Each structure stands twice: as C-alpha cells, then as structure tokens.
Length: 281
Length: 166
Image 1: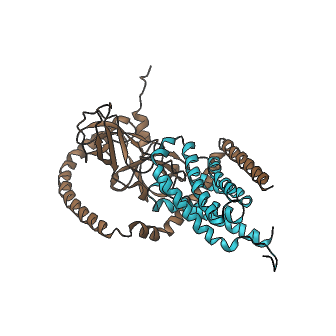
Image 2: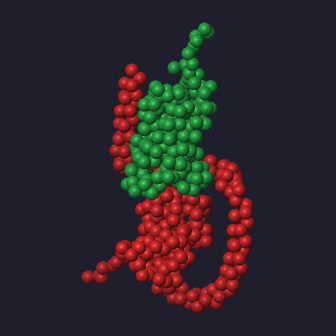
Image 3: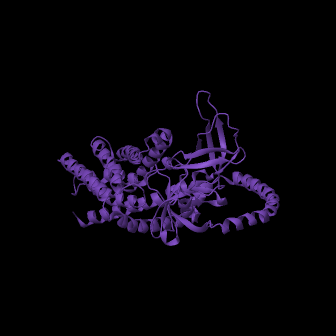
C-alpha cells in the first residue's frame, strides 16, 4: 500500500517538474521569477548579514599567524606601491592629454556603479552572483564587474529592473580575451567551474610566459575594457605532445568572499559601437 | 490528521524553507569550494522522511524547488528533479534500516544526486569528475547535518498510542 502511494507521489512529482519546466518557457515566467527572486534574494542577504560575525569567526579561526604574516606582507606591498605611485603620477599628466583627445573623438568613459552581492546561484555547477543593481541603474548585459583592487571578477549576464546576474570568471562557461602584461602573450581565460583557479588557453608552447606574470584583459575581444587586472600565473606546464601550454592563473580576488562589486556601466554601449560596421551605400 | 501532526508539519515546512535560505545565503560564505558544501535542504528532507514517513515529505519538494529556483539560472523544475531522489532513497532504505542510518545514507545519496542532476542540467557534467572529492566531502557533511536534524526530531517521532502497549 505504502509502495503504491509512494509510486503515485513519485509520478506526481515528475509531472510537476515537467510542468514547471514547460511553464518556465511562458512569457509571464521572467516576471514571476523576478518578483520571487527579489523576495528570496532580500531574505537570503539578510540571513547572510545576520550570521556574518559567526561565519567570519568560523572562517578565520586558527588563522591568526597566517593573518599576521599576510599583514606584514601587505605593509611591504603598500610601501612599494607608494614608490610606484610617485612614478605613476608623473605619467598621469601625459595620459591626461591623451584622455582629452579620446574624449574629443567621442568615446564615452565608463561610469562605475557600486553594488552589493545579494546571493549566489543555488546551483553549485554555475558560478553566478546576483547583485543589487539593475537596468534602473544603467546596468546592461556585457558590462565588466570589478572586485577589490579594480580586478575583473565577472561580466553582467542578464539584467532585471533592480538586480542583475553576474557570470564570474570562475564559471565553466566563462571565456575572456586576456594578455600577459610582461610577455604580451594573448590567450583566452576560462573558468574551472568550481571556484578554483582559472585556465589560460591557446598560448603557444614556446611563449615567454612564466609563473607570477600578471594577466590583464585584452582589447582583442572588443567587449571588455583593456588593462583590467585579473590574476597571476600560478603554474605553467609545457607538455611536448600538446599544441598549447597548460597555464593556471590564480585570481587576484577570492570570488567566494565578494560582498561589494563595481560595475563599469557604459561598456555595453562601447562594445556595441566597437562592433563591425557596414559602409553607407 | 491531528492538530499536533498538522502543527509539526507546518513547523517542518518552516525549518525546510529556513534551511534553503541558509543554503543560498550563508553556506556559500563558509564553504569556499561550492561542491564541498553540505546541501542542508536535502539533509532536512532526509531526516524528516526517515523519522515521520516519506509520504508527508514529497510535497515539500515543490515549494523548496521554487525557492531555490528563484535564485538560480536553473529552472525550478530541475530543482524538483534534483530533490526527488532523497525521499525515494528513504523509501527504499527505511523498511530495513533504523531511522538514523537511513537519514545519513539518504542524505549523502540525496546530496550526490542533487548535485549531479543540477550539474547535468547545466550541461557541465565534466565538472563532476574534476570535483568528485569535493562532492563526496559535501555528501558526508550533508549526512552529518541529516544526523543532527534526525536527532532533533526524535521527540517528534510518531509512537503507538495506548497505556499498556509493549
């Protein structure tokens, strides 16, 4: 008897699943999803904020020595960066003149919009974030999303009125045109799908790329602004039987700890204007 | 259905939806490798199904899937399919096994089935082989979470009524 009832339930659940999959193709589905998503995102973000002291404690328990070492290293980095900053300021004056020229020919600069991370995708096979800004804040698909240190962390995937989904670079479906800053080697950066390192593909075996090289976005893709830092090469293997080198890149930012991001609005329009154009007939 | 049974069923629903909120809001902040995280809603489903009966569990997969689907690229229907194996496993194991082991086995198996279904639905099956260790770690943590919930549910387990029943 129980077997029959369970079989009936199983059949009913399969039917409901199919019904929901079919219903998700209806025109009304995105509106329902936006409404329910906004509700759940808000509650989930509230739960995350409320438990933040506890989760921070769990994450950093026993890491005091490591944090002290990291602090000392960061202080060293700050001192070095201050020296570099002085040199950069000298270059700034020259760059300003070039920027004025670019402005004169009509390229729109990007406007950064800050957003907080509301929730992560419930499907762990997809590295997506939901952020608290949407179309009302001039967010559009294809725009670059930056994390701490202005490092690129992802790209806007789709947008609703007051929220947007970000595909992180670690997502298995992510691919970004990049260049190794020192060696000027071009490649495609892809995610590994579970929050670990990134893979730099299509780099020739004899390319002069090495561990520690900074990877930045390339203008080659025509979608993202060039020069945004992403990560550093963490491992290089050159198997003789392969056509390309196997290169791993460690992101500059821990994607799992993102709480706030910056969206470069205006990039989508830039990408559109950078696309191929037909001569007028 | 008695009033107390109805009240405990509603309480279970709230705990289950709370587990889903914690899953999407809090768990990603603690477990940096997504595949290595426990699946709390699966743990709660398994514990309830093993302690209170599978037939009172099935229907809860639908609101749970709607909630999880609303914060995912994946359609809610896929979440229903991903949650179905948990009560199914409990139904298969429960007749021959005590409550606690049933919960742990169903929670671990349900977690693997949940992750596999959603990875398959996202067309990213190769990820599963590369994240096999992490998935197993997530399954063990889900089993432990199921154990905690099952122990908490012991006072609510249905008992035969009557003064002198042995």
